[in-house]
Image (cartoon, rainbow, N blue to C red; front, side, top):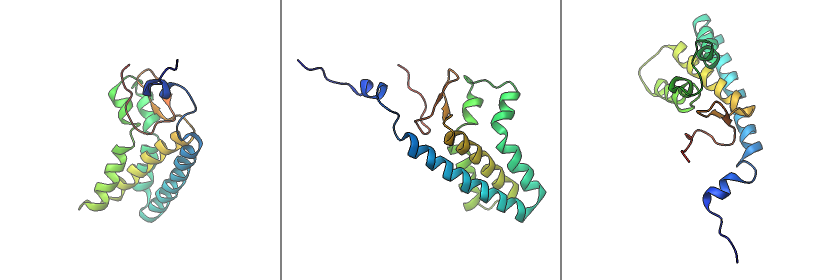
Length: 140
């Protein structure tokens, strides 16, 4: 007699999907984004530097302001797609304000650094999921 494994059983056991290669990828992206932010900061001056540093620290600033893990704002500052949309919209749109672009670079750099060090996307209970990229948790 054999028992079949359901997809839920497979997701609960075994090593995390893409563990080390995913962290290396996030680390490489973080280095690239940091270098790009430094380039833009040197090119455009102090306002872009301030914007990049402020948004790099956005996750910490949100936590210091009292935003805790179960909240939507806490989840929002750790999403990859939000600064990515800002970068793409700035690149393709008519807006020509470099601090906006470097702010998004700083924010995305911070998210990439956290994922590279294994902190992953924060779950609603305060723990983090380092093996999944950016999918919201499912209810069991």
